[in-house]
Image (cartoon, rainbow, N blue to C red; front, side, top):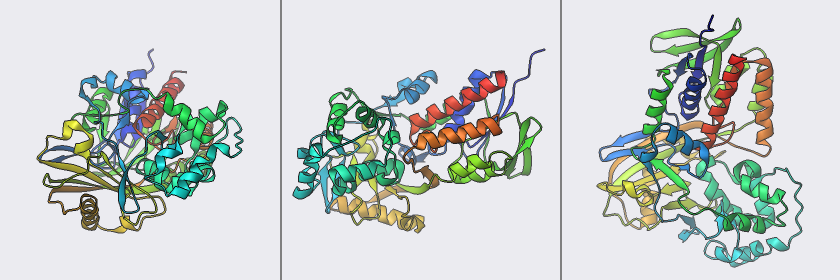
Amino acid sequence: MTRPGPRVAVVGGGLSGLVAAYQLSLDLPGAHITVLEESAAPGGALATTDFPSGPMELGAEAFICRRPEAAGLIDELGLTDRLEHPGTLGPAILTGGRLEPMPTGTLMGLPSDAGTLAGVLDPEDVARAAREPEIPFEWPPGADVSLGDLVAERFGPAVVRRLVDPMLGGVYAARSAGLGLRQVVPGLAEALDKGAPSLTEATRRLTARRATGPVFATLNGGYRVLVEALGRASGAEIATGSRCTAIRRDGPGYAVDVTGAGGTRSVGADLVVVAVPVPRALPLLTAIGGAEAAAGSLSGIRTASSAVVALEVDRALDLPQRSGVLVATDEPVPYKAMTFTSRKWPHLDDRPGHLVRVSFGRLDDDEVLDSGDEALTRMAVAGLADVCGSDPIVMHSRVRRWQDSLAEIGPDHDATIAGIRGELAQRVPGLELVGGATEGVGVPACIGSARAAARRLAAQWQD
């Protein structure tokens, strides 16, 4: 007799949850998959809103197209003809109250030639960075350390404040001192493993072999296009307005308690994917017998909140000829980055107004985020006015907040996650944890993590 397909509960309908559902539908064609999403719509950090002039992203804006995970999924879903790439404009650094072009030959803010840093750093800081190759350097192959601490030690703290932290802050919402080198810049760690004698030389080797062509891509119509395609292709039942309050063992499987508009119900599942941010995942895992140790390890991963203010402003405003502004961490402004969306993406430059995104929120710095939406919008508009030298006329605006959604990916993060997965596999079989706190932040990383977890679950079911 043919074994019936499993019942699958996916807790969280963001990118990771939707990709896991899609992969499970491929690997287990008979599965009945239910995606439980607390909010009113799936997508999570992929959040496309509608301005009167067209779609605008309030969450993730783009992905690295040189990594295979996102490009491969988009091709599978038949969306390749929707790909769009940014123009040629680069970002500026806001430092010392002025905008300076991002220096050439840098990698995540690390310099391959200190001579290019003169506009961003003071002369004495440039001189210190230039001495980096002369400082004795020992690197044990396979090691992982704090990226920010290593850069400060080798190049000086000014390189961290004015280059590395601004580059990484928009993605990780954490200062580089709390980020692991191997997870955040794996190519640099590999170059050091292979014997690069200094950070300057390791960076030079990587920048010298950069592939030509665009680095980033997005989808015409917004990430909503990807979210909808994943929902259709997975064939999953997507239950919005459904908050998972508990996961309990139920015989060989699980019972997932869900609260929604119709009250509380229990969803039976043979396989479970937990695809929610760390603070939401922790109580769910802690309550499952056998998952206490895994939850304890997960609790050590800190998370940050953030907010995006999206604006459409009258084209009378003279935007800088830059893709956006990255803010040095010693600059006295409340926002951490500003994207001139319609400058950066040529396919969006046909709107009646300029599109601009202003980002707020860093780890351990939530004071700004305590402000209401109107106050955040005023800060965004004031910041844009300072950068442009005149007050913008705001045509449309939206605020979107992301509570505890960005994980601090610290040194030896891979080992921590491997330990968590090992505990879950041994003590809570049939349950997987995915999302930005596992393989790292970013669309390709989340896709890769979710597909790998789904394949492990499918293999368990088929054994």
